[in-house]
Image (cartoon, rainbow, N blue to C red; front, side, top):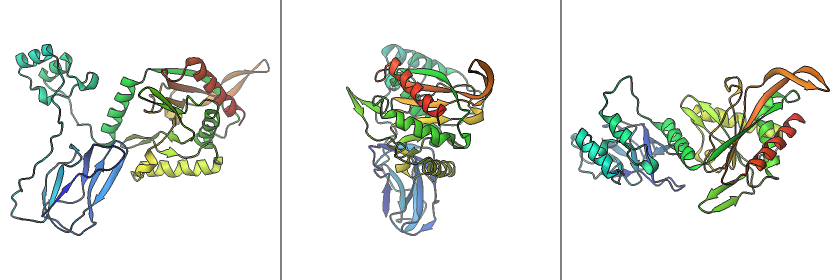
Length: 345
């Protein structure tokens, strides 16, 4: 009998979600056959079976988030339908964080605090959380799973920890080949970041880490949610090379075939929603980065050139930045420098 436990997937990850079982109980499998897909906070990883035999018991259902070391499945052993006594690691090892007042309200309302996910700081259960648990449910409900769960956790952390400010300015894209918009913006940002090291940085405890590489994330919308693959060495590569890499990564993102290393290590992020983007956005910083640049919808608008009102291809450039690391004036200087490069491209 082989008890397969959730392995350590690296990158300091301590837990994973069972995204999809690729086998079923009673199925005969060979060593290295696809066994299970695990969703981490970076990507989905397919794990092969380390042993051959009959899948005796699947112990963790799809959608469950469990710590590293939890027994997920038993291969081999008795096949009489009886599940072996396997210790399952708890989903949440810590007790709910709650104030005495909220605990009293929960007791008076007959609410089990262990069944509530806190929405307060550090997961603290609030009075509103308890009140919500006493109200009758309505509407269709779906648990947060997979990429959507990761996005929710990531965005919540960024919003909670980063004191963000957004700067906005218009840009004349009339001279820009809009078919190459993303690689052109990547190139302009990467070259500008060389002169603004605090924008290409991250905050680690009480230290600012200034990064000397220009690996930029590109936000890609997929059917499962937003993912941010990383385009490497954006400052030194040609536009054609960057464009090919962006197209390849975007296709892999939509197919769900991105490799874990293609989703980690970005130093700055660029996002553009094209025609769906609206005039401008106030994007959330891609933690632990300190800034993100977005391009709004580009279209014909009236502009003044040489004292004459003419039509130009105008769009808004937004820069959201971590005000702990980047001052407002420097953020504005960076944004204007990027715009100058775009308008001269």
